[in-house]
Image (tube, rainbow, N blue to C red; front, side, top):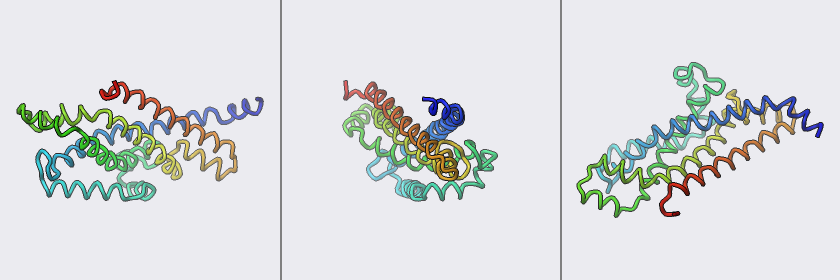
Length: 225
């Protein structure tokens, strides 16, 4: 008990701060990725062959951009984006320096996830909306996006947990967060108990995120009622 009290006295404030930094590196990039990824995902679906407004060139260009973005390992991505990060965020270090590359890396991933979520919407609903004279904008907003909310929320959970792993990589090059704690204390200083504490906090964060999103999905999913 005394050891535990001493541990929290020595590392409690630091672990709390880095946990908050990790949460920021999950929430902010996920929000940005959704804001940008949803329009891209919609365009990918609408412009695809058989979509509401097929456009082969647009679909091919967007598809290539998204695929290229998804194919670059994040550890390379964050290094390549350092000049752009400095311009946009004013720094390439710390939490601020990690948010931009995390968001950029998440956008292609989110765009494909949105496209897949929208593609799962019952085609009968789309045909019904068209028969009532709904235009493309109305179909996208009132049918595709509205009906795919549960799937999009599941995607948000996946995105948050994925970015938790990415934030650990960002921490290795000066972004802070629990990944930085695990490397700096557990690997460089051989303080294994601090590394274990960081890992346990990550596990708890994942469980909390998944549990919250499961509850939210059950509440909004009409099929579960």
